[in-house]
Length: 239
Image 1 (cartoon, one colour):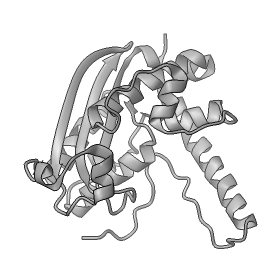
Image 2 (cartoon, rainbow, N blue to C red):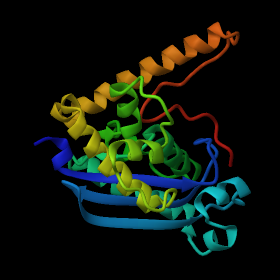
Image 3 (cartoon, one colour):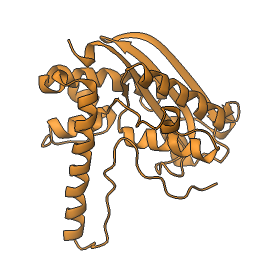
Image 4 (cartoon, rainbow, N blue to C red):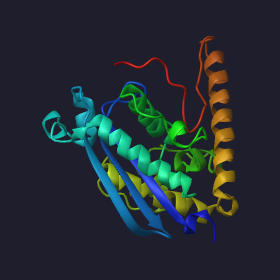
């Protein structure tokens, strides 16, 4: 028994870019599982309000024409935030691969559209618990060679990922991957979800500090690596 046998909410975004402060939501999905059994799913198509760069279309396949048929981005961000907050209020962990990207981007969208922030919706509390297979895998198997993309790590743990870069497929794979990591690494499974959340904060901070030190030794004395997790600091946003 453990958090990996209880309900989990997988979460993923496909976006217009790779900077969470500037990129916009194109598609979003939340997937509920329990003990690897699919219990529910919700998906959104958003009109991001800006042209989708060709390099982003090449990744997720959503064209400007298709996105124009989606709901306004503000409505999607608001609805998605409500779903995640409901999970946290009821103690259900939210699983996201590289969570600091998706949650920071969602937070940027909420602020951009003048909507309540995640912390405001939680009465000032931080969004938690969050389970990030990317952060956990890089800690428990630090020296494994190879890529750390969702596809590569799913292959390492024997998780099927059909339709990579489809938000629903990636959300489901992330949730199942979290469970597979827990099975392989009992010390992860033994932690309560809240304790695992706190461990990931520390792991992310230490890894960022180590990388920042490396960059400065390589000749960039001004290098700064943001190790905050699962939410990064938001700069002034592009309107």
